Image (cartoon, rainbow, N blue to C red; front, side):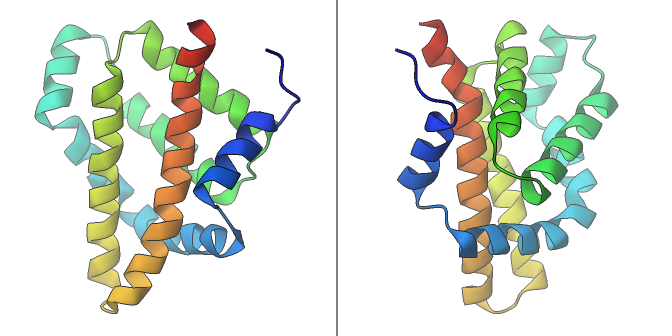
Length: 157
């Protein structure tokens, strides 16, 4: 089935009810999270899952992967959600599939990131409602990103 350009993105945005307030919240949250992102990624790459993965793929260049992840999130939280974004994220998803990264571990990894992002926001925002509002925007962006990255699997079926 051939869908019009932008259909998939619009479908996902509508489904998760991503709105202007979420965009503002995600961008505001990223301003707080960004100075701490190196520590989050170092924690992630030292996790048991990643230790097993790097044994399986000893040529992984962890510093390069960290730089790429930061650049991706910088673009995600500051750039536009358009077809260029969709193409970039699908390429990322394809790269993960090419090296046989397990989809369940890929999804769980995003859960780890969301937990770390919330921890950072709670530390910087003592008001629980502020943290919840910021996390709502971040969560929608991260889940949108994950859905698009995984959507290539559907196309390959």
